[in-house]
Length: 147
Image (cartoon, rainbow, N blue to C red; front, side, top):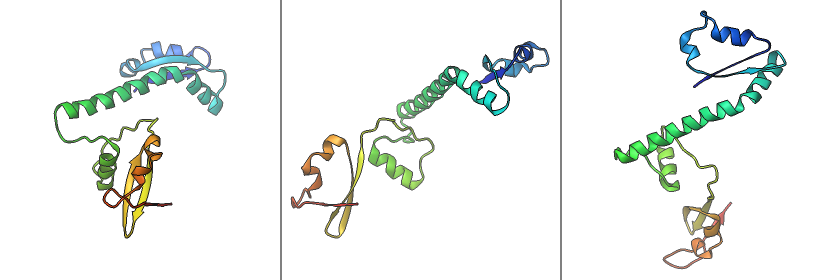
């Protein structure tokens, strides 16, 4: 977490260097930005001007999350899962504390019906083009795609 001081004129700089400014806050200042407006417009401008500073904070947070995931794996705590099927099963059970999602996950969900039974498959775009994924493995019968 971090703090960005924003404002017009020199008040923000003087405040950050003042003895009245809490030293604990001084340690977490990410930067100081000059804004031309007050109110909501000034707030929006401050966010825009500090975007690069704040993106590094997001990167650090993401790095910590991934580090925690790898730590769970290395300690073999069984408090982790990966893969679409296992992750969705854990979500259904309410057993997920933190969920990491890849933005570019190339996967579609298919609900396929075979007589009275229904099967859920998660396929990549390439697998979705393969007709064998839409056939019953035991009988070779075509599975019906449920909308």
